[in-house]
Length: 395
Ligand SMILES: *Cc1c(COP(=O)(O)O)cnc(C)c1O
Image (tube, rainbow, N blue to C red; front, side):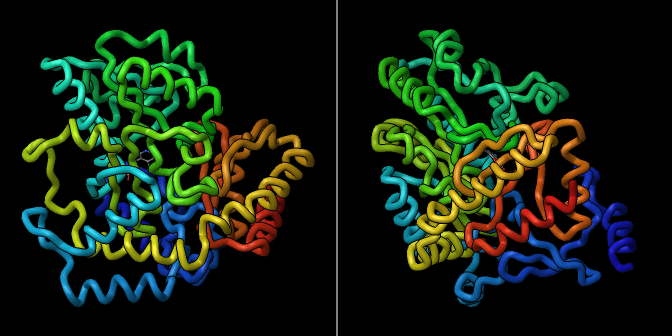
């Protein structure tokens, strides 16, 4: 088996920060992936909610190839039109005001935190502001993003992290209110918590947080890195709640496979936060990744991807609910659109995930007991049926 020797070689070179599945993936087609020994997998993981268009989409590939032939990088000292076009499309989809492109979700969070801090600094003329984040949140692994990530064991080895962060309970407005002081500058949360176990925001909660932020001029940062870009059945999950963030972060499916993120500001923040010299990135928004972002939006429009998610969601939910009904090991389903979680009881979720892999189905976990389904957004009914079949065979 080529897989075994390839894995051995990889482990000799690559720092072991992940306990990887014993699979070496080589190519993809549609919603299927293939390993180096020819094994075929139905993909309900999408590279952790990244590959919205699945694999080997001709238009997407051609756009990237064309851009490579022209130019891949210029730095932010110069203008480049793919960035301008990608920016225009992000703003059209979100109805927000200005965008800054980053290389990852984590960096989008860093930028969002800096923008919020700068807004408060400019307003009050002094620093030292606090940020309220949520328990069980995930915002990334850099020092700033880790500081607002609500899982203690991710944070502890690296403390002291950024100061002035307080944690509240998600979907508990009173616990958020209890953390507000006259120094609070921002509240940061995912619109649908992902890594923490697939928890959508309650409408009353997110509306309550928005009202609280309006009342006290606190910046609301909504992290749409995982739930955004159509996955919830809306371009951005907050659009379903009738609220708007002051800052939104985006990544994962934004480039559908190239490393790109963004933080997006509303008009208030765009006018009174980061200024020339306050923030930068060498690679961020380069023509290569932005050609991908731009094409992703084009394909989303042309193929009605967001509508497709919304149309197919009831079918997916109904099939998953039937599993919860049928099997004792599934205690509940939670989620929005194509971001769904099944709560696993009586056995480790890892066991189900591993058996699914052996049966040719890629799924992942979230939190400590949730089986997470974040497929490419282009799956069809038949793929949902196949997923259910393979999952049932894995129990
Ligand atoms: C994945 C993720 C991040 C971090 O993004 P990276 O691209 O891994 O840096 C931040 N927030 C949420 C909600 C995520 O799912």
